[in-house]
Image 1: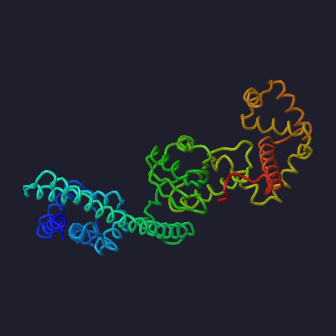
Image 2 (image 1 turned 90 degrees about the vertical axis):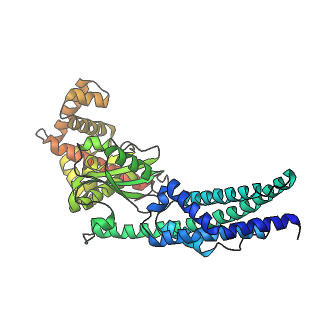
Image 3 (image 1 turned 180 degrees about the vertical axis):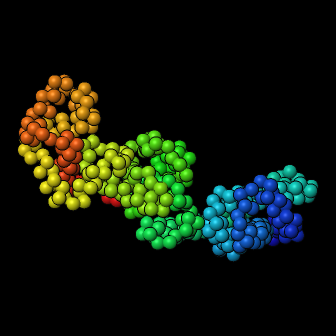
Length: 408
């Protein structure tokens, strides 16, 4: 064995002899500089962490004594530490930092030891280079292997946790006894439920929750869609809180109404689902990134029983249910007039026509309806009729043009 190999073996022996001292120094550094590590309330994780330092040191001195050799597999205590970190929701960055701190302490020990040997400059430089290579191989192996264990376990753990959360939410929606502690969300407050789909619904919902300072519960649904609830003891007006939802392009959110308590938890979710069905079936005159249940409640009711809805619309609208251009204009005018609270000027601006045109069309519509009409009933019938026509149009193009929204 040459002198260089003997010197490296001697350095490995130094780590063996000073293992307890180095382990204590590592514990102090981690305690002082890595606060998150010691905040994990798990005896298994802490026990694995203490034992892991000994495994790291053994790997380090073995690498020096065997010319950079690393073990075939990750030592047992390091496996336990990585597994327990993943199960306790400890990010890999925390564990990785603990490896870096241990590496620093071992490296400082070796550098000071070499400085005390009074070697020639060339011999000292060569040993430093070889020692660095051995330590790099050692810690590169350890962090890569431990990172793989952590990532695999964390992915499985998240999947199991999410599946369990979906089961609990489903039970709560079905009226079964599920505690708020199990859900991780307070159901005895005010809620607004959300169904999201598209590019990144979860980020848009999280931003809204921060803006509203609301408690947030999010669970995966199907594909890329999510279900969510935002809760507070008290929210402001619905219009104001709805404005907090501002998704990016190609992200879509359907909002339930503001409801209260455990029954409201389920009701707002049902409303959000109804609203999402209107959006994904492209039943709106203009696509919206946020669709609110109060705005489409009539349409959701209409499509729940299309036969009755069609009979109602035909009964109220009579000749105005025709599909020629004149009847379409009259229905548009009736809708705008109703939405403007029967204000001719507002309706004219919405339609982009003169006020006299609105008055002329209204007279024509009323004449066709037989004179004495209940405008609120007619306005409702127009909404019902439009929803049915949009549904027919959707069905006729289904499978030909397709939709860009994923069904929820």
